[in-house]
Amino acid sequence: MTPPPPPRSRLFARPGRGRAGGHLIGTYGLPALTALLFLIFSVTLPRTFPTLDNISSILTNQSIPAVLALGATVPIVTGNFDLSIGYGLGLAHVMVMQLIVHEGWPWPLACLAVIAGGTAVGVFNGVITEFGQIDSFIATLGTGSMLYAVTGWVTGGGRIVPGPDGLPDAFTDLYDSTFLGLPVPAFYVLALAVALWLLLERLPLGRYLYVIGSNRRAADLVGIPTRRYSVCAFAVSGLVVGLAGVLLAAQQQLGNPSVGLDYLLPAFAGALLGSTAIKPGRANALGTVVAVAVLAIGLSGIGQLGAQFWVTPLFNGGTLLVVVGLAGYSARRRLRTGITADRRRGSRAAPP
Image 1: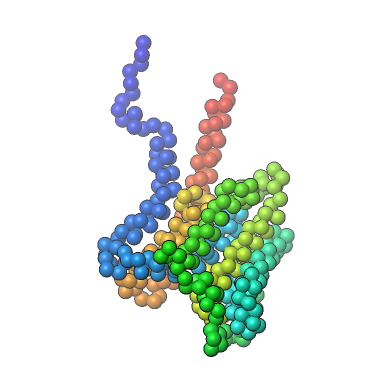
Image 2: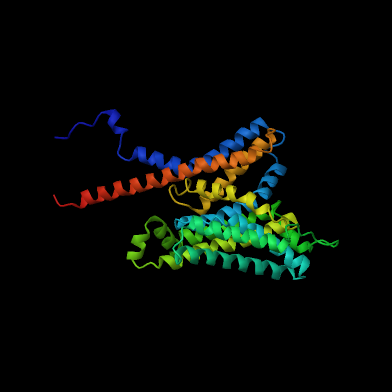
């Protein structure tokens, strides 16, 4: 005899449907928020916000924070934080100007030297964190303070200003030129995001980094050289900081010893907020790009609405507090979901 069908209310209460909805919200909620914010500001400011000039301005102004946020994402994957990125950015762009303006180096050689120096700083951060057994917060904060001291020593506390002939056009074009009608820096961000996505999601190195970040002891037990790969994560962060310093020098066209610190909070806000999207509960490159887009649209919109100058740091600081909470919640939710799934698989595999 065929049993009667369940009541209609139970047909729509299938197991996992609520979890699937929550997963979709966690994965695509931030991109949806990006589109919603753009729509709201476009309706509120129809003459200035949804224009090609404004979009180009957003892409140009937020390219360096986006690059720096992508650099901060890699150590976060391993459970570490690189607080030296703001100080490193300041030193990198000052060194580019110093080598070109005062030392007379060809600009390509100066850029390569600064990127290599940024990588070396990242390796140093990784070594003192992993082999010196110093917490990454303390280690990179101390390193950052040292980098700031070096910046002051190089500049003497003043700015590095080019001579009457200015900087080479090819160098300034690294930031000021366009491609396909869009600012070239936007394509740098896209290329870097794709490269980090491939590194973290498609290559064994990225998988090892995620394992280290989720359970370092388990990574040690399965034979993953956790210290070596953590140093590699810091090295990638340092390389990206060097690249961001080159772009900042091409943008500013002078050496300002204090400018790098302004990028620290936006970078971490983007990296941490990105861990709540696309791959909720873990830092990822695509989520970071989406997070930076949300922050950029929000800042541009409130700026055009006439916000005062102090709103920007207030927005960045408040956003950082919120996203740290969201990132922690996403990580705990991901852990609970994984534990529940493991228990269900174990119950199904248990003999009757």
